[in-house]
Length: 94
Image 1 (cartoon, helix red, strand yellow):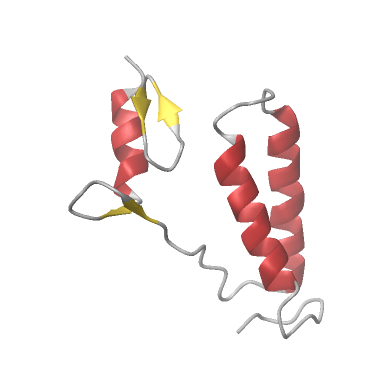
Image 2 (cartoon, rainbow, N blue to C red):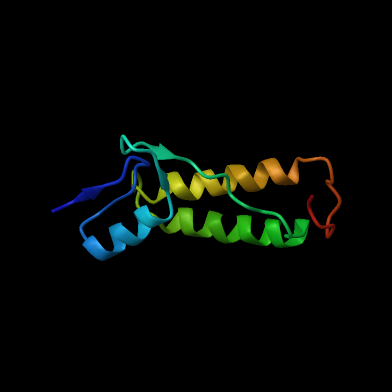
């Protein structure tokens, strides 16, 4: 049986799926309330390194894989943080 999360994640592993769903805030109607990715406390260098690692993971994923959606969400959050007001390599983000 395939378990499908409203965020797009799908797996046949029940325990993995329950663990995944526990990370979401769910409203009473079962809809996902998306959490912002918390990047506070990371330097620009750490964010760039994380982005490179996410790009490598994305390159290894099969085309059309459900894993690409959460990876791209994290990459977009990192890009937004890097384009933010600090913009100085190695400086902590607000």
